[in-house]
Length: 208
Image (cartoon, rainbow, N blue to C red; front, side, top):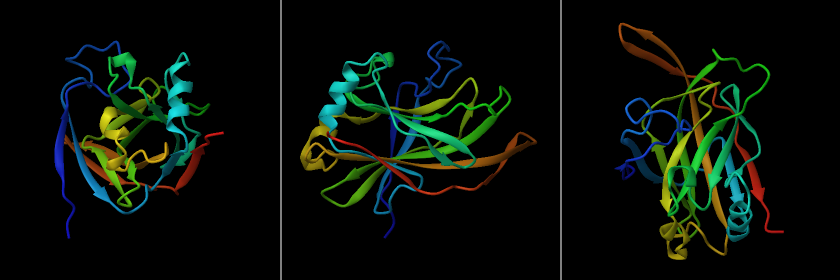
């Protein structure tokens, strides 16, 4: 049977450029495709064994977010940046915010760019499958634009309701698929091919 899919429109930006104007940044309406699947995330799994402890720790920190350990995919190093209380930089307080961050290193230069299509996943413990939220657009990561994501991934009340399966016994699981594209522009069109996708990585945020 095919996957059921629906489009959700998010009205606010989900890049990391706060200074850009709405007409030139990613703040225009962005479309995301949601679906469900049983397969695990391809590249990274973040297990949080005490979400309430993480919320408390993040609430008292200056950056207001939790960053995962580094993982490798498609020739680059990455991290997930999770805002369990919402991304207050963009006046979000009632949703989970999640971003994919390209890690800076000595090799990265101002001309180094990576084109990526990514999908975030949230595990439904009760049904044994993942909610997937895919950004339909290919995003370009560079030295000046290191993160893209979804500032309204899930409403906090939906996420916190145990009957939905995302937060059960204070535990939850997030993941990401990263598809790096090699693209050439010819006659105004993108000719893209997927490159090496890497291996699955896994980490946990412990409750003690």
